[in-house]
Length: 122
Image (cartoon, rainbow, N blue to C red; front, side, top):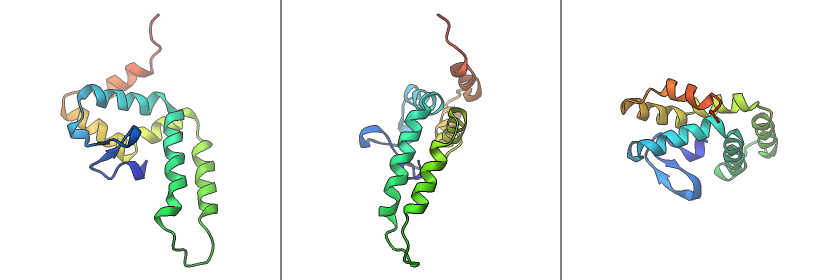
């Protein structure tokens, strides 16, 4: 998720670039909900980012390759439970920025998160 958010801009699905401050409240809420309830989507985003990492630093002064680090990173993210992935995403710089923007708009983020994890009524 680090390659998707630099502290100001977030690169969302389809390559669209957003500033959290410019996103509508509904879009922010839906994004936070996705980070919380769709761990498979989060894993897919992180895997794409991990696999892109060697392109960022092709220089290897020790003559090895980044494949060992990539494999370990892939193993780490795919070994997490859905709850751990949700916590990771919500506490990432992106998740924190989205929650901070919602708070600045008067949204009770903790209450919202507790509502979306509760089973929906039929």
